[in-house]
Image (cartoon, rainbow, N blue to C red; front, side):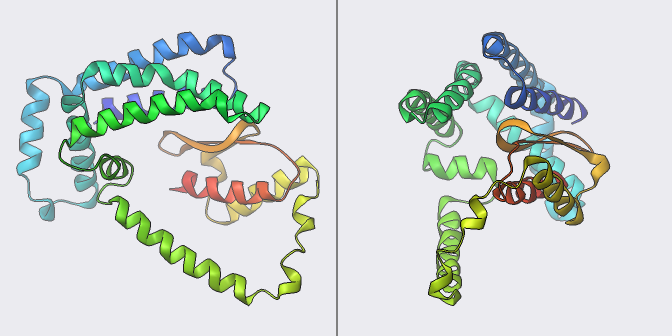
Length: 258
């Protein structure tokens, strides 16, 4: 598990760099590096020792384990299934397109042209579906993909939560006086990047985030949080002077605190 965690930390650093400072010309080599690292990680789960461990862990009664032990068991078995069921060539192709897909997304965003990103999105969806069907041939692909991100959940669980949100947001809107609904001009005013960033960071840290365990990078093209290791979270976002940045910091701060 330690070696798996080390690989996850390296992948976190690569993702952080990719979204903040990777030059476009370096994307091709980054693809090779990311694919090679992923291949080495998958090799941890190929072999007799990994097979024996998977058999032993599968036979254990989760009820007799601590929370940490149950988590380690769940993570190992999930990674083992992916490494042994998904063809290596499929995994390699998926890792190889990721840098190009991010580069295309950035260009599409800058130029407001979805057509730049569309073919890469289709490639990613096709490969994800291929991976899902390799994992669970008899299950709906999207259910399998949801379960990879949030283990134990299926697409219907997500639909149920959206229905709760739909009703709740509708109730909130009905409580807002009609004359106030179009009074949000203050949200579109530029208050200065430094001031908004400082306020957002203070709110995120006041919400439980430890300042000693996180860094904030304002050079990203999109808000995201990368976990690099224990007590080491990296938040990236596009720095600006609009109040929406505060909500981005609160959102990403929640990921970092977790």
